Length: 109
Image (cartoon, rainbow, N blue to C red):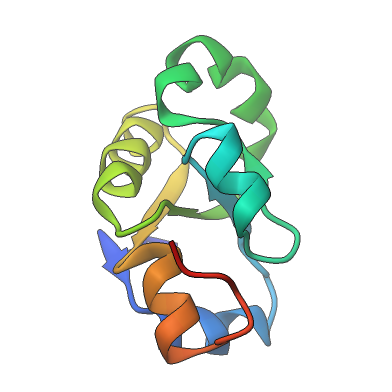
């Protein structure tokens, strides 16, 4: 499977309804993660990602959707993962787009 560089929140909703479901990787800070997150997401802040790549070894061959607040940090995180052979894509607009377009119960900040 070759994933696009980015996907929209609407594409993610569709994808979450079928197999293989992607792993959701949140690259925001710990405080942001506590404030709002996508269900089932795993947190590895972008600044910690380089030293924690061994934790993601098991994700090779599995789809990963990387997200952040607005979609900028997630682009960098997804690119790093792709360089390591992980099938990763970034969520365009991040959790902000998720909150405004998909689930308004997710707090905005």
